[in-house]
Length: 506
Ligand code: COA
Image 1 (spheres, rainbow, N blue to C red):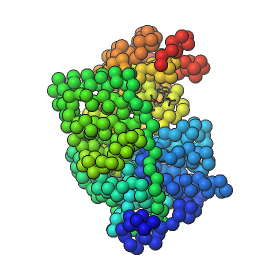
Image 2: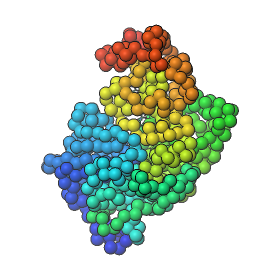
Image 3: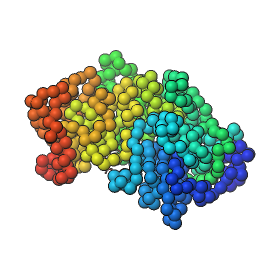
Image 4: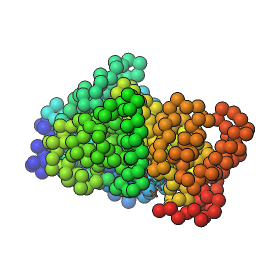
């Protein structure tokens, strides 16, 4: 306790230490909570757990706003306890996913750069209590975040009261990684002065009025580790196709072998594709990304990375151990920002990022669905993929050409939900190849997408659809009554295939 109290460097706040149970007791039915946490990193842990415990004997509901998904099964426990009215802006938990799709709670899926604007503009309900994980509270009262920033700045600024969870499992050495910057209100704002991914434009801590700190809870609990799958044969081939495309850009004089600031989305596939750069000729790479997954640290270890900007670090246990043991080395390369800045359209366009995100499905004209299975069931959310795709120099979407052991084709006549329209999708990459859609009319995209990205076992049927549609004419030919027939077949029979024979692919 003595050593832990040293993390509160402002003496007048030392008497604010309370138990998680006491802090959780201040949360009332109907309140809106702003929790720190982004893709399992830097999440408030003790108070959400104490809140779940309270639900064993009390009935209440709260709105839960975060940066993105949470660790420690918090979303699962919240759902099982039935205490969430509305959740935003992202989640990735199977139990909560089921709850959302069953109508047990409301979920708002929006671009991750937008939460701050909605809070600042008073569109969302005011945050009653912000719960922010920190490694320390500085002498001036500012909060030094831990392994993510996410929406912590905006929640702390706009909350009526703040509870800080000081987590001593995180080293104080994290201080100095963060770069806290608030762009100000819409319509009365200067350009964000960020011209290079490694620039610092803000402060180390979240500046707040110390009087707003209602309580401080001392905790000692590591972040949950990432659960991504390791690269496999197909993702290695996808990475090779992507490298081939990037080489063609260099040959055309549009890139050098330092490329451009890279963004890589969450999940196993985007991580695996970035991993594929380890043995490439590319060097001095810069990342301007949302989450740093294992592959970024592998690239740093391989001497390929100059700097990496992010809002969160989410890695496997092995990687986290390496990171902890060599934090001073990695710290030199990393800048962590609020998600409003890591994902800001203005900055992304200025830097000209190469953005690699994952699709669930894409269609023959290049529309991409990243969120809704068969157009209806929420997977995780759009996350930052739209922030980047709309504004990147190169908006690249990767996915395997088949899902669910071959029952599903990722390439369909018409996506069942549109997250990224044909206007925002530059390159599609699967293990079959890549399609460069830039500057092409819809009809020119079709052969590239079908022949280079779709799985061969679905190509004939895709061509049959397109040829029949083309007879009807139009700029983007469709047979509306058949456009979603593959999804209907999937819902009715469990496969998009006409016969189950093709469902053998592993
Ligand atoms: N139809 C139905 N299910 C599909 C599918 C399709 N067309 N394509 C993939 N899936 C399923 C997979 O079978 C897998 O299911 P499982 O969890 O039951 O095994 C699941 O979707 C995840 O697919 P996986 O192959 O493991 O890929 P991933 O870990 O790379 O995740 C997304 C892919 C699309 C779900 C994930 O990247 C995501 O949520 N993206 C949206 C947000 C985003 O892009 N954020 C980045 C911004 S920085």
